[in-house]
Image: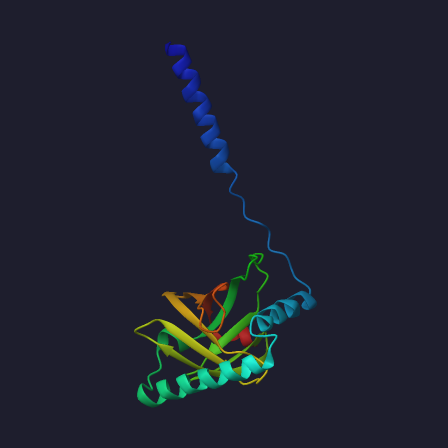
Length: 186
């Protein structure tokens, strides 16, 4: 009876040891420039809509909301605007690979504008509003063919998770961004 208990403990310890040691990190690979551009295109694709009439209606609604918020509560928050945010992960039905978005960034400014791009290249810009009490981030790209986006923001120091809302049909998208210094843009 005691020998069987020793065997059970030994086997349990062996299984536990093997399962704990299998936590290996994938090696960071250097991606070709075309792969990084594809990632930027994937992010832009999240803002595209098939029906252009629908985009115009969404943009009109979002601009009305944005202008109202900026008129009645024109406060900017360092929690969003301090530093440049680099994309770490994007989930849009499929999880991105670690390091897939290296060098892809977004920079929120105190004047309620933002720019986004990769490395030293600015790919676009727009206007935003961060509603602190609700933790909502409304973004409207300057490109009229892009639909607006609304996110629930979860901030934790130098990390921010954006969770898409149903308002502009982004509820299937989540992304994690980390705060970086200005050197990412150079």
